[in-house]
Image (cartoon, rainbow, N blue to C red; front, side):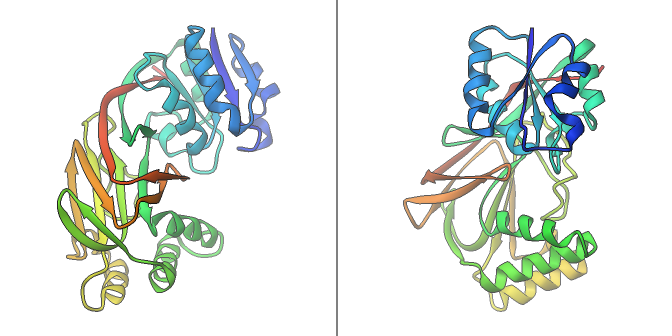
Length: 280
């Protein structure tokens, strides 16, 4: 039997446990506070569950996925949060599509990003990036997305703190470091345009803060749509990388959830380590 965990704090009312029991009649559907997601997912793996579903946003899905990486038990992502990037990237854009997967879907294998033993399904970052995303989403209610991006980046470049990072032996003063699970699109903040989830690569981007007029140049590149080709952006695609920071512990965003980890940060792509249940 499959298990479906429902984060009661995510999504609209129609994705509550009672409603999901009707859509997933063959599964054990349980409401689960965010703090208990990992424990219940691990228990389901130990009990031999056919799959573990989670109705929530990317943060909830990451928490459950971390317990399933390398176990062979499939994850069923049920889009019930704000963004639902991962669910959409595997072809599940509605709760009904998730129900189709549960009743007669197929299993695919995708990569998982990992850093110091912690997993992520979308991306990880240090520096200003998490704050940029939060401020952008706040402004999207009253500004076009592109304008909201620019305003959020400028706000953080004015007020944020630089990081001194060492990336595979090269030292940079940086505003932020972004590490994607798989290759993303050309724009630094274009996180809805992932090329694949099974190429076994990390998409690493460093926004440098050690050039003359760096703030203005980053803003100008954003306005002109040339940030991806800006000399202020150091990019690489690799299977693994090590990032050291000038302090022993650092805040790290994992799919929007912030954890404090010891440095150095050892990132790697766990190739096809996560099985996912998707519609046929």
